[in-house]
Length: 163
Image 1: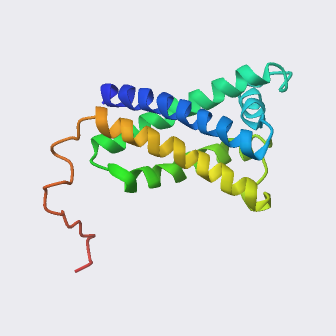
Image 2: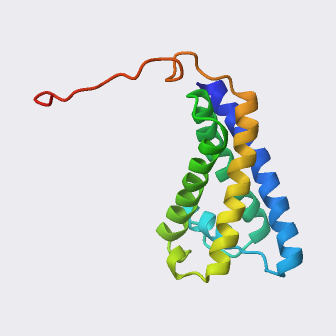
């Protein structure tokens, strides 16, 4: 399992690099400024006294740290035969939920329902780029577990008292 998670983490780091490149390319066209919400979120999580200090370094640490952590999740998904575009689609929402939980839980972020639609679309698109890049690599480097649900008849679990 640790090998699976390590491979997933590597895939997550690579996926973060792809996402970051896509963000920079998008910013050339949209002229959208960098967001330092990840840096401030990390500072609040760690209890650092000056949340706006070293924003670029903290942004990178938060991006790549979260990318590695959730890459481990995607690696486990690949091992359990949750693979391909459908699994990457599911993983996109895991990434979004993680970011929003951390950002809103620390009081740094705002609920996505309050964002301008254009910002919401951009954020979802970038997280999808991350998840699909991470997923493609995880699916390529993580061997599926032979005893997972693929090729095994569905097990019917019955609760006592239910037919």
